[in-house]
Length: 374
Image (cartoon, rainbow, N blue to C red):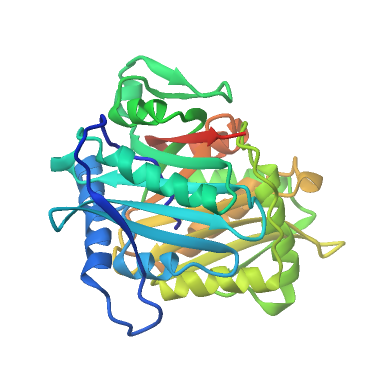
């Protein structure tokens, strides 16, 4: 799992905190500074307050592994202090291989200190650093429970034309106040485990009847060497074939080294993974893939990562086929899991339909915001 969100804050005030960059521990066994631990704990408190559980929060191991950054993305962590106390934090992600005019921003102010303008101060620092690095487009994400949307509160519609976020929520007001536009909305859905075996069997039988030219291959944690280049090709497609509304991102170039980097980051963060792919029997080409990850430190939740079917191979129920194969693998690998959590762009009706058929239920939404300087 990654964190690059634009979250709750408030109005401007004259007095503000000081904002400074801190470093993630630089390797296994490295000392975890009090500042970095406070940054992590602030995120956990926020998730607990928002959702009632820490299921969506990163573990300390995950935060350490992710915020070190890598050769493909530079990652900064900032904390805001007021009279010596950390009252908020911000993060900045700077892609290094593609999308080099963009930056990901995340702002979080501790609950007792909101509505005092501290979020605007933190965001101003992030945007200033990004501009100094030649970035002219800033992206932020904010995930929240879906209950207000289901209750019919007034929504700010996304520029994509599909979905919206509560118009009067604190996060929406803050984003609009700071000049961000809502480009896209994702639906956050959960599947309760154990799943209905009879129902899943029927879906799988239908998918297999339509995909007789394909075989399913699964692995855990590390892609076999014989498939890694073909798998990297599918990962590259993932960055161009999913709906991105008006976000204007460039496609990512994946190769074997980049796959291994992602796998190493997952391992370092305490994540296990299962992956299922569909292979075309005649050509040997990998046609679809899906990945799930799990944290032993928080064993109840399994997270859906990417799912993609190569456009050339669509129309054969391959998305359903690989997702079911991976679900079966996951429940055997991680028997303590009680739910699977996924996110889909609201306009991605095909993948949403697959998830609904599998039994996923909406639990949250995620607004995807952007601010362009040029």
